[in-house]
Structures are given as C-alpha cells and as structure tokens.
Length: 284
Ligand code: NAD
Image (cartoon, rainbow, N blue to C red):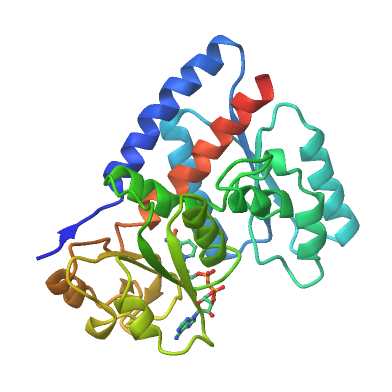
C-alpha cells in the first residue's frame, strides 16, 4: 500500500518559515504586500482570490486589491501594471489570467517586473526556473510546489529517472527545468509523445500535469514509484479528481499525492512565500 503524501504538512512548514521571515521584516519596518489584479468578475478568479487572501492573512502578508473593469483598454491596463511596478509598498503582483480578449497577455508578461512576478509568468521568471530557481524572478508556483513536496518528503532527485507528463509554461516545462537543475534525468511527455505508458512506467518518479482525468493508470506505474498528481479535473458528478487513478497508485506505488489535498494545497503557500522573498530582496 502506498504512503499518501498530503500537501498540508508541506504548506504548514512553509507557513512557519514565513512567519519568522515576516517578523524579521516587521522589525525593519517592511510589511510584505501582494497586489491582486482582477479584471472583471469571473467566478474562478474570485474563488482563487479568496484562497490567496486567506493564506496571506494567515501568515501576515498584506493584500492590495486592484479591481479593474472587464472592458478596460490595453493602455489603461498596462498603465495599472506600470504603477504597481513603481509602487515601493507592493512586493508581489498576481494578475488573474486568462485576460479578457481585448488585453494582450504578452504585453503583460513583458511589462511586469520579474522582481515582483511572484506567479512566475514573465520571461525573467521562466529564466529563473531554468536556472533552478536562481535569478531575478520566481519559478511558477505549481512547479515549485512539486519541488517543495519532494523536499519535504526527503526525496533526493539527483540521478533519478523522472517522467513529467505535460509541457506547459505554467507547470510541465518549468518543473522539467527545476528537476534537471537538480541533476534528475527528466523525460518530458506531451500530447505528441509516443508510448507515454512505457516512459511513465520506467520512471522512479512520475509526475502528471496534463489535466486529463484517468490518464495515468496501472499500465503507467511500477513498484516502488513515487507519483505526484498535479492535475485538477472534475468528474461528471462535479467531484474534483487528478490525472491519476488513485486506487491503482495506492496498490502499486511507494507513495502518491492525493487530489484534492496534494499539490493544490501547497501552491498558494508557495505564492505567498514568493511575496515574502520579494520583500526580503527589496531590503537587501
Ligand atoms: P495545459 O492544458 O496548458 O497543459 C497540459 C499539458 O498536458 C500539455 O503539455 C499537453 O501536451 C499535455 N497533455 C494533455 N493530454 C495529454 C495526453 N493524453 N498525453 C500526454 N500529454 C498530454 O495545462 P496546465 O496549465 O499545464 O495544467 C495542467 C494541469 O494541472 C491541469 O489539470 C490544471 O488544472 C492543473 N493545475 C494544478 C495546479 C495546482 O495547484 N494543483 C495549478 C495549475 C494547474
């Protein structure tokens, strides 16, 4: 029977560390602050926003709300981002995406300062992930959340064969880079990859970030494997599930993360920890 690796203890450990850092910053008169930029009233944005606010308040990170009308023009939107870049009281900026059609996502990514890009969307942040987390920006939160889970459960990835399913800029590719920078040997799979089950089965660590319920089942797994499920999907009955058939993982793997309660519980913790880190860098 596999060990179930939950995300909550990982998030709790991140919180403890943040509280120490926030106390040290307070002594220097700095209050780490996250600007949340929401364009319009999309339900999924509001729901994620609530989670981010709750997590920020738990550790003592302040929130600056920037609520913009759904029909804001490109110029006005970019002016708002530039104002936040220049605002010394703001350490991190989270912009909900996808943006409405009239707004240019590339322009946003090129305008936002990597130093404040706590969500890891700018070219500077992607370069940072490529260098294993070293650079002006911040690795995308979900990719880093997977690394935090592996660290917490004391998995040394050096020399391990790792298969990552998914090659998006949000999760799969930055995660592949972060693992590679730690000397894992990574096979990255995507929609055009031949024989994904064989590539998954041969891995010592299997990570699925495809967003396809039931994609990973017994034929992808091998005894002793560590399986990390990043996927967030919903069954026709509306129940949240990952990419991995959890009963198969329980029966075959050494350890597996659940959905819900796995990677997702760590992601917002990483976001908030990036705000604290940005505040620390600002006083260095
Ligand atoms: P995406 O749609 O941008 O990318 C999906 C990737 O999976 C692509 O590279 C695609 O080629 C690959 N893929 C899809 N079907 C495949 C198949 N049958 N075989 C092999 N590869 C396949 O999605 P994303 O933004 O990278 O997110 C991936 C998943 O992670 C989604 O379920 C998303 O909801 C979830 N997610 C979770 C968190 C979290 O905090 N847990 C955060 C962000 C995203």
